[in-house]
Image (tube, rainbow, N blue to C red):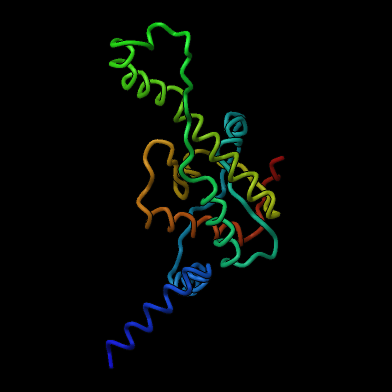
Length: 186
């Protein structure tokens, strides 16, 4: 009898995943756990304002935690796994032959560190900003230290999935929480 009950639970879980309802079913258990967020209070400095295009958070009036979490997860999905590709120049003589084939992997690593990482960070921020803006969220600036306490940068190394989901829950709590006392970013 237990075997049939277990099979029924597995079938239900698969059906929820296939229909896209797994995230909604999961949200009910997630909200039961306390989610701590850092204080968003800070004294604004001119150098901070210059970095608000990189360090910001989202807020939308009259949004539930579950809706904010679903929106953040969806937008995070669009911003995940971005790649930066360098195209080869067919007229580059160093890139051809034995020297080129030996140096290509080294050059690709160097190029990725110089150009790829910053471009992936920029693309992730842009995708999150556009997606959340489309959903009606507003952006508010933060100093880098506060931003880093509940956000992740997966341009070099992706965070462990449990950490990523925890940070998305923190972001959702902020996005659905109290109205910010700072001016909205444009």
